[in-house]
Length: 156
Image (cartoon, rainbow, N blue to C red):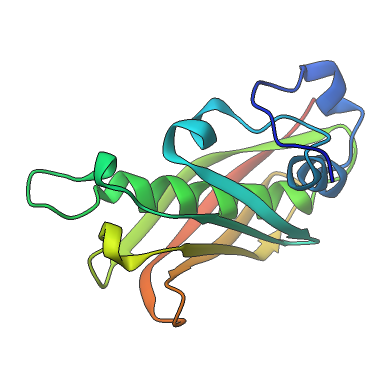
């Protein structure tokens, strides 16, 4: 495995990779993670066809005024794993982007929560649209947040 680095993958390089190959490159470090991953401290740790896992440990730098981790942290982890799960199911020369997502917060996330795991799984992928669901859990497997997404699939 190559050490993780941050940046962007050029559109030409993206077009030359199948979706799963692209996401597996993020996992292995062969391709750069986006700068948001560095900002929030998350990593893409698993990729299989239609399934992607992102992990992170929430810190005090992510707190909202009420003293819990801002919901945008969970939203970003879930948007990332669900969107990449859809992308992993696309063919070479295609990409995807989030059209919309719905999120439900069940338990607060705090720095004491420790490592969290966001797992995105494809529900359906067609020629133009893919849907996925995501679950954010703690180390004990407790469900903290769940979400669904609809992604647009497009030719590069």
